Length: 193
Image (cartoon, rainbow, N blue to C red; front, side, top):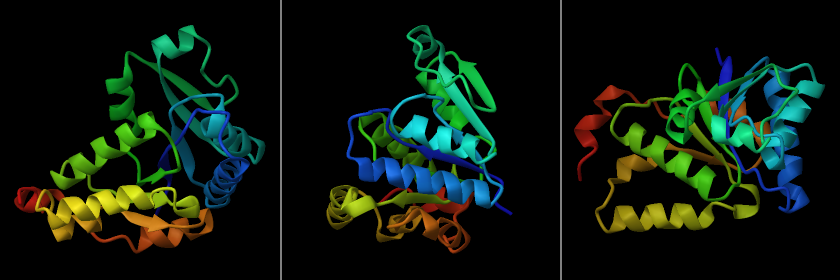
């Protein structure tokens, strides 16, 4: 059963409206499937829209936000629970605890950094849940090409492609999680190339 999903996404409010629309659709998918949304606690950008739509549809939203972001009032005041953490490191740790999957929406350097850390943890067998990219209009195609280059150049193994799944629409999410390749702690045995 899928009960809690962590979403990595942007806080920028200047991005193309198509990305906001995808965040809204994702929020509805999560609520319709009684899944708690876990995210970075922000009130603006895709983060804010995701949380707003989930809350408007009677969903449950938990945010983790570093204290310094609260000091500049970036925190969302109208979610189920906003948890203050010490720093970005603690936030990343809490975002992946006790969840059933990670969903990666389009984002900037913060989203990419969170995603790369969790892919690294998965490669080492320290994180084993599905990682699902919502690849809106090919947003992550260049990243996947870079992963392919890493594999071709023997920085990663071909098996490491199984660490993530790419979908085009939020409505494909539940199926993607249910059919994601099984990954476990034994991944450490193939972490090295």
